Length: 131
Ligand SMILES: [Zn+2]
Image (cartoon, rainbow, N blue to C red; front, side, top):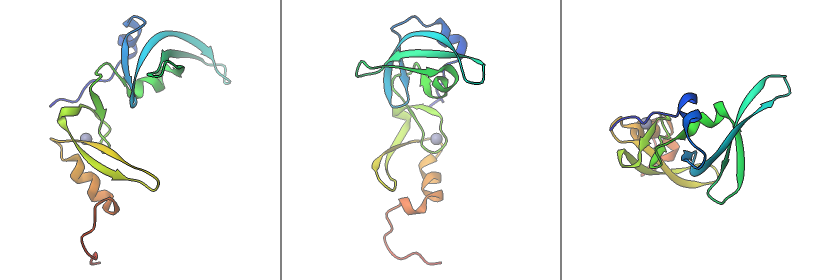
């Protein structure tokens, strides 16, 4: 029941091309890294990858590292944003304005309870709310 560590720049740099990385909601394969000079004249490290459909993509390293992890079975808690193993999470239906999807919440930190507390409109309301 531990929080999964995110990838560090050092760790990412040591991974060979072809390594599978969980990046956001998908699993991507590392292709390589390069540098790019941005509009402000600053040099950025770019991570190149192939996504699950075989489409090439690239992201600035620090953005990539915000969600990248080597734990392919990990999910991000919708409440606290920590990476957790799927088995340590409870799944709840989360509705937004347009979509209805599964949300993952840390089971041990009662993240789902906290989430539905601050988003009361998400909870199926059995009756009228008393103000
Ligand atoms: Zn959480």
